[in-house]
Image (cartoon, rainbow, N blue to C red; front, side):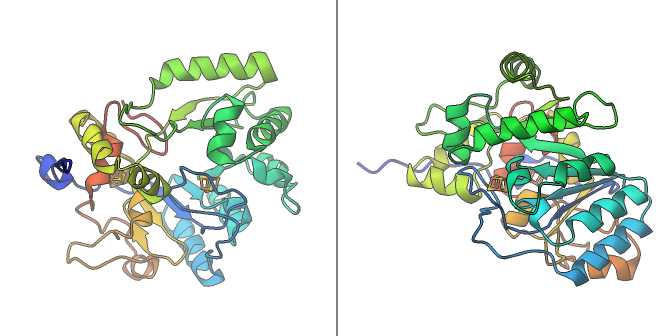
Length: 330
Ligand code: SF4
Ligand code: SF4
């Protein structure tokens, strides 16, 4: 007998009030899709064979935005492996020269690739906040998700950053990111409690490898990108979406990262968040126009979005304690 489809209430209906943008203070820039890894949970579907990256023209416009808008407090660089992509160093320097926090979402292993060995020193010189993927503190789990040998190289990279002062010098912040394993059956669970997991990570990494770091961010896997393909292969996509919906928590809404950020792709298009970027759901002005950085520079205004664009994968950010690039929300 065919299994009946599980209905998920559209996220837009679940919201009982307009979902409005707040004042923009974060610019998250996705520099492209090239990466030295090809992780199974990657929502960007990045890999060494991708070729998409920022162009010099778009980079110049981004630097102009960083210079012109003092309301931007944080410039958050992601990819792919942002360190491999055009514009990486000039965007970091521009952000720091204008007194903004510069965040780099780093996969750690890139520092061992030819031509990138000076990246940790570059981070120190520019007081970059490093947010590093470490989906588990156990070797098997990490290598299963990210490729053989990735755990060892990640450990060596964290030790390297520690030797340079990361995790101990208050100016050199090192945060780790935990992603749950992708489900292989319908026994779903949300990410464990962030505080308790942080304690476990700190204990394990310190005892076994002498590693220390600042905070751990737990991030829920949204059913998009490679995670969606994984779920579809196992016929789990609808059930997983339903599971996320049943854990919907309206208290997360005010804290979602899409409220105060612009997410920009390597072509200069603007989205409300990185997930919408990957799903090609552009941010829109009040008259319904899709936005670009050229438009923002013409208008001289960052705050031209009223309503945030949503889709059913938004249940992933609003389930339980909530989830964002900065971890749990509540
Ligand atoms: S390191 Fe990050 S960007 Fe690269 S494949 Fe893995 S998850 Fe994707
Ligand atoms: S995916 Fe998450 S961050 Fe993006 S619009 Fe939906 S709720 Fe906001």
